[in-house]
Length: 306
Ligand SMILES: NC(=O)c1ccc[n+]([C@@H]2O[C@H](COP(=O)([O-])OP(=O)(O)OC[C@H]3O[C@@H](n4cnc5c(N)ncnc54)[C@H](OP(=O)(O)O)[C@@H]3O)[C@@H](O)[C@H]2O)c1
Image (cartoon, rainbow, N blue to C red; front, side, top):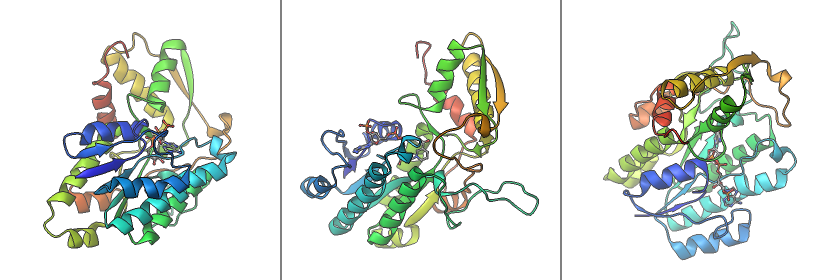
């Protein structure tokens, strides 16, 4: 099987390339070779390659900058996704795409005001340009008629790239005290977890004897994160505590929770990013680890020089 994998220089693309190297022939073009912002070149590239599957973790992910660069965010996250989906339909191949908790506005609560996890069919209402561009990408894929899986995830981190985990580890070495937002709730998701889960789903797909029936039963949107919900503040506390236990940090900074209002950003973020995973568990029999166990697995892969 030949897979076209986009975004392999990014956090998730990097992990997927590693995870899938003994599963299939993975063609992972750089942005210079396959620029999703250059929408005219997408169809010819895919047609020339003739892949058996497209996996699209590439995205315009600069959430704050997107408020200023909305046209570019839309081009990469919506128009390019739409063209990839059209190509997948023409070739009769599946598209696996990734999306985000930021398609929701974070206001889902029960009658007592307790935060509730979002289900796949809950109403979307993005608060920022990035979320709107990702939602437009989801809709374009769903309407394209191609076989597709759209995996919505949240708070992605890994041992490479730019992410919250690496930022906290760096700050923990530089500063005795940190102030971290404690009024946004969500689930940290490692690319190690996501790439394992994605491989498991792909294995189930390839092993199915009746492909048409498999896609009829499974096509659609899924929420995919580990179990549990936390805040950025408690996530950072877990990072420094676990890193100290693993010998990655000599000392841990004091971490103080602050409201989002004290850390203003150009793009508004949802208060509640919690995603309900019942559907992904039921369809693909995935055992989801707790988010802090998943964090420990990632930190355990670090060496002391990280
Ligand atoms: N990060 C999160 O917290 C988070 C949360 C929820 C969902 N997601 C979704 O999860 C997926 C993976 O996110 P990530 O954190 O791995 O992203 P990332 O680390 O920012 O990587 C993005 C990748 O997309 C590539 N890319 C950007 N613009 C491109 C273009 N015009 N043409 C070709 N490639 C382009 C980047 O290439 P360059 O290296 O050349 O820039 C990079 O390889 C995305 O769909 C994202 O929306 C992420």
